[in-house]
Amino acid sequence: MNTLTIVTAHPDPKSFSRSLAAAYATGANRAGSIVQTLDATELQFDPVLRGASRTPMHDEPDLARLRAAIDTSAHVAWFFPTWWAGLPAALKGLVDRLFLPNVSFVYEGGLPRGLLKGRSTRTWHARTGSQPWPPERHRVRRRPSRGPRCAPSALPAWRRRARRGEV
Image (cartoon, rainbow, N blue to C red; front, side, top):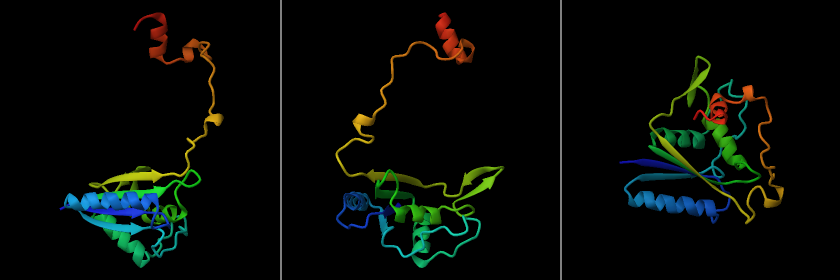
């Protein structure tokens, strides 16, 4: 049986993000999955990553419960609004505290290697307002191309061959 963890991050229980999460949970339940839903704004934990991940911090009970839920889940779904072009503060603090070196990933040869393999994840961002972002009046309008703006030798080899008709 599939297990699913849903993480929401909106303080209003009647928000669009939470409504999407509830519909997602209903569909997953109907499909036979075991669903656990947690909201980042209701969890009791310190959202500040003290020691810049160099000093281990003790997991509060709610954070330990979410970490255990993610460890046992086959899929994690995130539902949150986009505020000021970013995550809500509660979710940002949660991500900072959850996904730490030597817990979620390790560095091998200077590159990160993930420790959460075998799971899938999806994110749903909801934003308010009817204006497209960025607003139309701030779009950069580009001039028509007037040819290369660099020396021909600086162009990629495939572009030079195309200009010579060798393609």
